[in-house]
Length: 214
Image 1 (cartoon, rainbow, N blue to C red):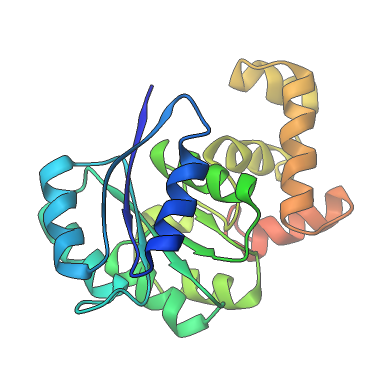
Image 2: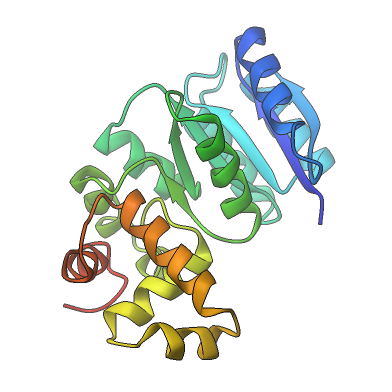
């Protein structure tokens, strides 16, 4: 499946960098790009990309308002806000506007690509599992967000939920129809992303991010 991406950023050097990064992957494609908010809305509706990467500080109309306008017209495109810093109220605004991603510009290239893939596959992606992000999730009255933690892909969400429920790697593998090795890979990746070092810490983080009830 080809993942089609719209780039909207006021600085051409950033757009060029993102395009070059995205086009290193065979199944990623930049379908359109722009330097301002109104054009971002128009291009999103015209091209219906899988993911729109929006600079939070877009000229004329900022990324949050662009998100609102796109979301009013279509559910086809998932939106990733691209920002310089973590901000509790900005994350909350992004979520309430309809974004499913809030990614810092300081992230490594692989993490940005991972974020795009997660959103294109119906997941969510945030740069950290900080209390700020967890609080922003708690403040958004959308059932979808209740079942997805920050920073994890959809499959990692499933694996962490089953670990938190006490399921063994073999049980998880059978349930998800994947190999035990793949389960272990998802487990290790989730622990790394959430900065935890034991199963007990992973369960606590899963509760804090509302993967499972306390």
